[in-house]
Length: 249
Image (cartoon, rainbow, N blue to C red; front, side, top):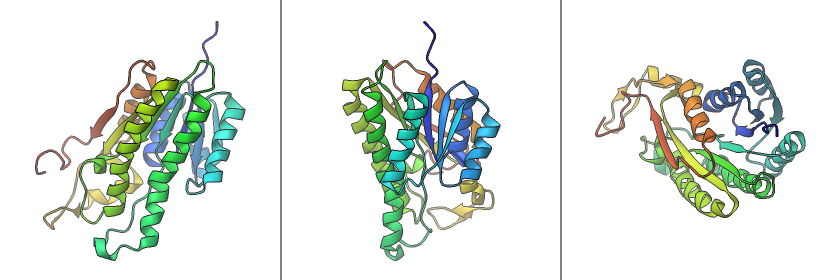
């Protein structure tokens, strides 16, 4: 009996961590549905990854756009083995009391609510397919553990992702759906370019911070995804070795 090609959906697949993970999946032989706002960036990921891909421009703040993504992936590939919930945004680094409510809601809708809706749609496919089950991997971030100054919206959503991960892992047991979280620190992406010149520290100083190649995140997620469904990495932290995190910096 021929082995089924594994199928993954990656949100935010056009840039940064999402692109690195999508490339890792494609180069490992997965069929990958690439979701993101900018079609041209998704096309570049598909070209660089080779293999079988589906480009689905998606606005994760729109529930119908998310549902269209999952419907197209199922229609094209017939099943879903892995969802990487990755799409996310930050808010301007302003004092907590100055953050606009509209910006707070935008970050919550993108970083948390979208992940919940993606998880719902993945459950619907994974519980009814044959072979049954699959794996959901959430991008939690170091911010799921400790905040940076002026990051209340982003940090709050990433702490909430930890709750979503645990609940998903628990509720998924009945359907052979595993869920884990990868917490990433200072991967070299467009979002972290400012770190080379210096970022605000808790003591008020600005300091450059080391970064690591985002390809290491791709390798880590690929490992998590490759486990049999009776084993699960519930939480993994992958970070630049010398970035401030452990202890006091």
